[in-house]
Image (cartoon, rainbow, N blue to C red; front, top):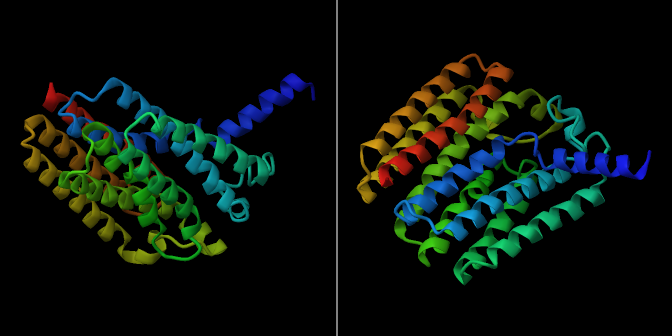
Length: 289
């Protein structure tokens, strides 16, 4: 293969390893980070801080995908939905994946260094969550909880970057997002339940068993209640609460999608959560206009 084509192929494989072609994870990480920035700044985040977090979300989500596939490189070939991923299919080596992970993480950390010291310290904890999560499915039945912290840690970082501190409100927003992650990643795991059982991977979908829909519904309800508390504490207006009504309607639709636990419909319900995050963010934007 000519060197130019070889370079193009490597870039394409690395982009697939980073899930550039599947931005759903970036959106699910971005929306709660933007919620936190808008609340912390009363709707006027500093442009530099906003840019750092948007770029940081993309880099850390990409890094998370790379380390996840590295951790699952011996499992993914036996899972229908993941067997064609670059590492699982042998188109990228484990060494290449680790180099890419450290490169992405280094770029993200370089961005964080432009922020205050508290945010830098919090980012180190965020990296720890990112690295730990992919390995948890081998040891615990609730790896989704670890993903929840990894996908929620941008919230205290956003408050710290914008305000210089981490007020009590931060933890209500984080808790709401944590339960939301349990919602959508359990749906994701429901789509993979048969394959996960076959390869010995653990998940909340397996842990919850026949009570999966009920527990997901409870997590949806808790998410909304915590977001109502956030709105009450911040004296947010009707636009925000209207957004929560839209989120509730989307949650109901997701319950309808997963009612028969069809794998494709469960994955569709997972994808639908991007609209939940977008609706809540729009409500916050309109609230502060």
